[in-house]
Image (cartoon, rainbow, N blue to C red; front, top):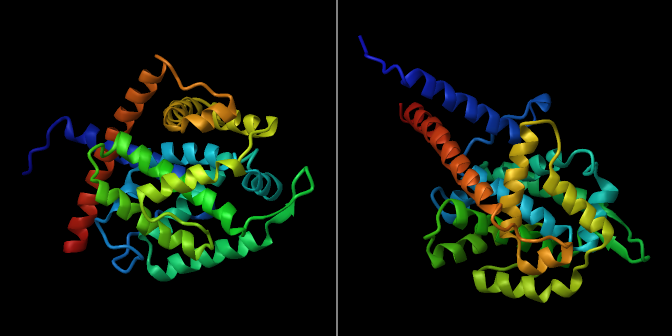
Length: 295
């Protein structure tokens, strides 16, 4: 008879509960969505920078919130979201759809990845309109897409380096941008960075395209305040504080936000603890999946 530690059952249960909760954040059960299964025939090879960065759930959540606040500084990107989506009432849904697109294009079979890209391109082609000042906008505009991409890539990588791998090699950081560029280019973005240096240059060169209105600041406040009921709202606010801490100084200034002072430390520590807990839960899940695959 196999001996079972008294602590193993609660630990196993805790892992399953945590995995289920995290998956619920990224997969809409009401639509029958299931986690994206990693494919050996994906656009990117296993154990490469883009797959490692995008696999860290907590860092991606923080990076996603930071990226969203950056993206909303582009007037065309903000207008497209507000005019053509239910973002104000379903922010979590938008984050979930973005996360799923990234998962499919990073880990899914290349045919599924290509289909997801075609679907997004078709959606972007229909997202057009006029801004309050009369200027026309289009979601398929290469420069608008470039800002959306560089905001995402920079935010995801910064969060990963802060909460998962502070010692990530410079060459791996450059490779991450080069890999992520493959997706951005297929979406029609231009210019697209393929290194850290290019990402910093593009972000700086595009700052004149940005602006922050009262509407922009209201959206940023909504993102930071969170939605839903406790404790999910409390969790989102902790992640949002961590995201604000990572936001570039120029973006915080434009949005009228202050970098958290001493109160940032509980959020940072809490986020680090959450990140370790999620990795602990998913490490067991991956181990069981690998054993099943090998047998």
